[in-house]
Length: 349
Ligand SMILES: [Zn+2]
Image 1: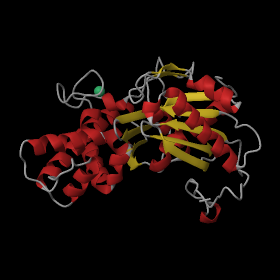
Image 2 (image 1 turned 45 degrees about the vertical axis):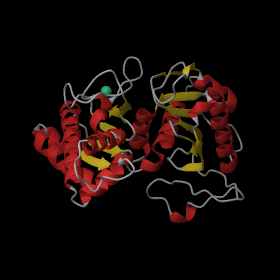
Image 3 (image 1 turned 60 degrees about the vertical axis):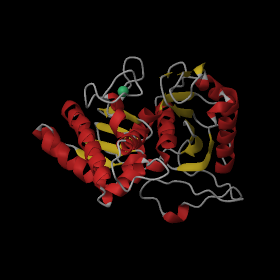
Image 4 (image 1 turned 30 degrees about the horizontal axis):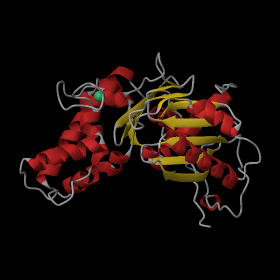
């Protein structure tokens, strides 16, 4: 059977990366937790150790059209597969679940998440606790990813850290004074719904002009399609609609339309980050998600703009970096909230 490489945090020797189902090695560090991530297109599970290493990674398609019962059954099967392949002799110390909101973290309920239509009041937390014999922690996926980045990634050693994921949507989370900010009802940190252009493009939320309406991958693609529909000549023209990745690539090659779209994207992202930096004066802002894969052509101009625009003390105190672990941010995030639960000596399950 094909071996699945596990993800290790920075500083680990390469020789320890290889794991295979045949070997079934024991997890070497701490009390491992089981991480479950429910994405709109992909399910992912893994065992996360106390130093942030992931073992027994399993992934599969979500297939939301099959409904919650079938999807959750496959999610839990993947989770059991992670436990088996990691060679864990006992139940995990806790089960962390990351999923798009809204949700009720305390009760472990999904409240019709935007990416899972019809999943109304699904008790995913108690179901996971029963299936795996361990207490559960449930969190918004971007908020969990923020804690994962803070605990195991680029945010290690910081005190106030903001995380934005520029993905299908724009999610986020805030760690303030070393603690994850959850808000009064547990769904705080929706950084994607900062207004950057009042009355602007329609957002996935009830409002207009949010950061998400311009800087998510799907919004960048939609803006490109809208411009092409007006007859603009561009290397983006063709039989298939351009993606955000296509826009970034064409902008890097100097295509005028793509460059205009990219410059607008950078400008509006910097508007939002400048406001956030002024409000929170963070040590660090971490950018993740597929759009951040553009790398320096995203990071360099955003850094310059925020440094120019933000109030001087905050502007110089804050670093802006790319995610250290973008490929597994939600699995590591789910692991981080589960470890947070065990560190607190409690369980919600
Ligand atoms: Zn919005």
